[in-house]
Length: 181
Image (tube, rainbow, N blue to C red; front, side, top):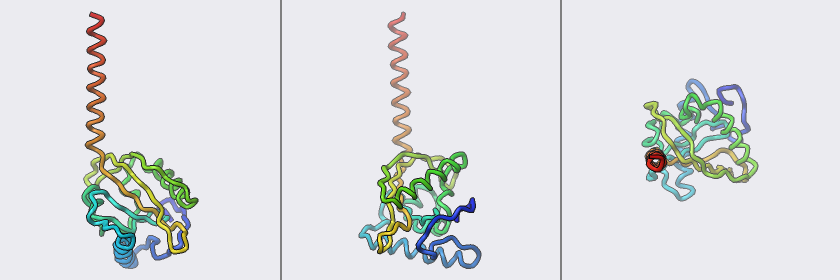
């Protein structure tokens, strides 16, 4: 169930968000499961510069690698068991929440989700541009039980693109003004 009281289908009750004393157990379980999942698929999530984040169908984070720690500024212990909405900018939460739901539904239907650029918020409240790739996480029966997100910080690339665009506009204006004189 999300913070609005909507419940999403989940085949694994152990990954549901719990409160009180059960939350520590959930975080421990989730951290271990996340590390095991990365090893299982033959990829060392800890050595990636990209943020690799897993979440269940309720949007609860189940794994958070070292790349995610560097990009978003939160330690794994702070994020595992929390809603993915924590890294969504406040002014985009409603829009992003609906998009998250649509993406999960597409993954459950087996549809492909192309990578896309978006904005996220760091622990220090700075906005960053990221490129997201989302893939389904399936259980042994092939049922989608969550999603894996790979986020790459593209803030610097976006800044350079904006500077180039502004420079091009400035040159264009100078050319037009020069021809008019």
